[in-house]
Image (cartoon, rainbow, N blue to C red):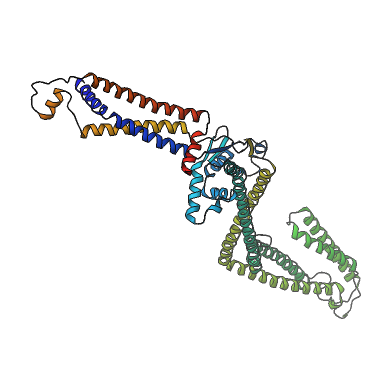
Length: 532
């Protein structure tokens, strides 16, 4: 530690020998620097404060109904980050006529960079209170720039948000129209598909499977009708051509006679028809069927008795044979039998046609399955298109409602707390600070040069220093004896140095006082010197 202190004292003594150089350089640097600071133009800072109110009563009421256009706080954050973007600075340049000063693209870029450096945008996202400031040597230009930035901040960025809303709504409308067109095409294709394959479609009323079921039902019904008709035909045939013919239709007796059986024949025929109808509906054990059969047997017994009585009462002789063809009951029975035979033939023909149709339908099962798959694909595409169309329509309505809500209600309200105004007092440059720094810089430069000169022109003022430099032992030293004139001259030099240094500090104090009390002596003096 002692060696360090000794070394510092050596440097101090060496520098002190060139103290006048240090003081002269400090004076020169200070005078030049203070003159430059005095010539700096005054800077005027214009500013404005704006409060962004993001509270809205309508937003919670429309929650779930209208599409939320985004977090309002996020929008404000984006607006603050993009305020000083190049497009906005170009707008400011045009709004303040600074673009008239640019003749080339390089000049334009220089003006934009200068604006970006001088514009200050500060704020707190918590309170949403923002300050826009700009500093320039023209107070009117500073005010105009701040006003332009405030206009862009309040209008242009929200305009971009609404432009995004319009773009989104336009996209939804285009997609909705596209899906409407797709739905119409699918509907047309489905209609044509149904027209081409109406008889083979598996679904719907009168479809493929319904037609098969209906055909089989008709076949069973026709078969049942044929069975009933055949039974009736067989009964009628037995009555006409049976071994025991009824209704007096047997061979003529040897003696001609006349039996009045017309009324009972009609009753027998009526009961027979009624019995046929009941046989279709019920079994032989049904009480009505048993009753009808018993009545029919009773009537037949009565008729047989009438015929037997007529035969006994008839006169004997070899009369001609009994002509049954002229019996109206016999003729009616023959007509009924012929009609039944025709009905049976027609029903069999109808049965064969139904069976052919069902066989043809069952043979088309592979084609029906392919058509069913194709129809499912078409219906699936149509349902998807319809669903997407419904979703787009709902989203479009929500977007329109949200846009109307944004336009009708102020979701984001700007309140200008401090409007921009042209300042009357310059805010810069900070000449006091600059002058202080110049004085310190002058003293530092002077000290540095004095130190360097002491290193290039060293002197030995102690034995240890000489011994260390030469590497030889120093046997002794002789002190200098100062005369009274030399002592007086040294004192005069020291006093002169102190007075010169005090003058520098006094001059610095005068400069600070002029700046502090806003006395424009130095700028006027610098201006006069510049003109001279």
